[in-house]
Amino acid sequence: MTTPRSRRAADRRNQLAACAAELFRARGYHGVGINDIAAAAGVTGPALYRHFADKQAVLAYVLLSAVRDMETETTRALSTLDKPDAEQVDRLLGGIAAASVERRDVAALWRWEGKHLSPEDQREIGRRSSAILTSWAKVLMEQRPELSASDAELLCWAALSVFGSVSVHHTTVAKRRFVQLLTELAKRVLQADLPEAGEAAPPVPVSNLGTSSRREQLLAAAAELFHRRGFHDVSMEDIGAAAGIAGPSVYRHFPSKASLLHAIARRAADRLALGTEEALRGSSDEAEALRRLVDSYVRVLTGSAELSVSFSIDGVNLAEQERAELVRVQRDYVAQWVNLLCAARPELPPREAKITVHAALTIANDLARTRRLNARPNLPAELEVLMKTVLEVS
Image 1: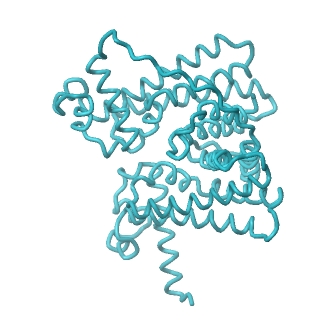
Image 2 (image 1 turned 120 degrees about the vertical axis):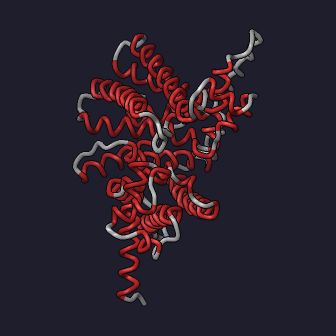
Image 3 (image 1 turned 45 degrees about the horizontal axis):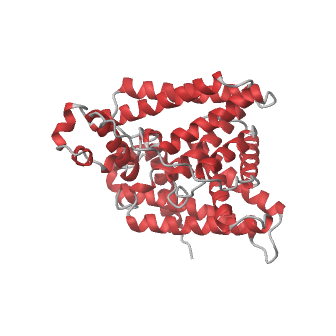
């Protein structure tokens, strides 16, 4: 039986977790301390420790609560002895969309900060998340029996990315329309026709014309290490060892680990800018330009680790000018997509176009970084189809 005292304790934990979630989203996990959370909640540090052992425990509570909410929503929508029908699927998608709109900060944490959990909590969240996706995939295969289990899983992960995309921007519309739009985008993804597996692309030839400069070797090594282990778990010594030089020698080329990250992000932005220029120059209309832009984005995303690494600047101690530059470049890039989409689909209001663009980009970003998916041999072509499906420029 729940007592008033236990209810008050649960309410206080929820309050503390909500404050922490907002801080983690704004500053990154490493940029928030226990005293920051306590101050935001209007309590003292010792009072917070009565509810959570440490900052990691707060993050685990937030993310496990989100998983439990999704489990509840899935059970409520699909609890039937009969084959789930389209109305039940719509109800599930609408429920998840509503939760995403109401708790955008939690969606962000699930995508970016889960790596900071203990291995035990990571396994628990991974196990329960996979169980949810598996139940979704089974329902999808009942609706679309031509799908294989692996293809159904891919589409369900993509639908989940549509909902998670609300965490990467602040654009909003009326809640009812926001939920409706996210539901529509997720349904498009679930109904997408994935491309047939084609002939594998030939391997990139190895050049014998010489070796890269030391600076290039360091950038390549850092990008790969940041991609695999995360920025904060890689040292300058690790980067030097991967490039075949002593750790202190790295400082002759880059004054800090943050400067390496900035250089990687700047290079990824330059690659995207070049792809945009080529897409615009070679297209006859806005819809064709968007299709070419999708192809360019996927090439950059899957061609190296640079673009994925550039997403991790939050929580990194970059110089304010460098951070502002990267944010401006990112916003300008997204704005080009939005402008093209508005021109190609004039019935779509600008804010809805921006939400749609972010959903398409997030699908590609998430699936390319998901271990159980990114080894699919036809993934680049699948990403292109999913993005074009969301944008409705197939």
